[in-house]
Length: 253
Image (cartoon, rainbow, N blue to C red):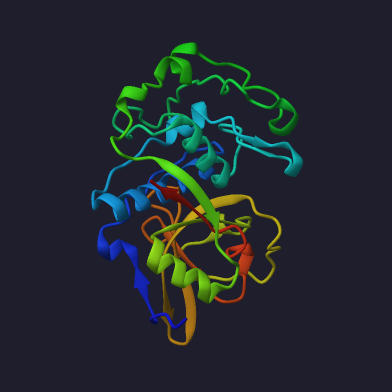
């Protein structure tokens, strides 16, 4: 399938403002929620900022056979977040259940009810019930009509990913971000970057070419002052840092 030389969902209003996760491991929740924001935009033509904190506080999905689980501030997997949203039946907005885990004066949520210590490690050392899912979650405040019914993984071929991105909307993905903290601008292409070491989840929003060098446009969750106004570009077509190996999307009702 032929795809154009460039495409960017930001030009169509499908992408919410860049957020800052702070010094906690919540990238997976940002990546998943921002994919769902795009899916909801595709369906309703309304751009809504959805609650990342609900996912951080309430999502305890796990897949023990693969050793993967959602672990609140200690990390997680977007595909498991989609499964949580399927089971929970909806998601609140950022305004009714705002992000607080990574703020300067953070909230102290307890682990989600089914938190798996074997897969996630020890529970948070200190927490407050008032900051936790059981106190905060209000299913009457779920965005009306927004239901995640399934999710799917996108084939690793990067031309295929571009086609899927253009048709489906912004896609969740992950990469080896060990060198990303040193990024300022330009096309990210570190000389050594193990594609199997996936340690950071982000959002694919588009692609382009600079001269003859193809790149992806990726939304990060490290604030607007990082990178290119909160975004980065990464080499496209070579599986750089595993950017093509964990591409997923939620499917809405």
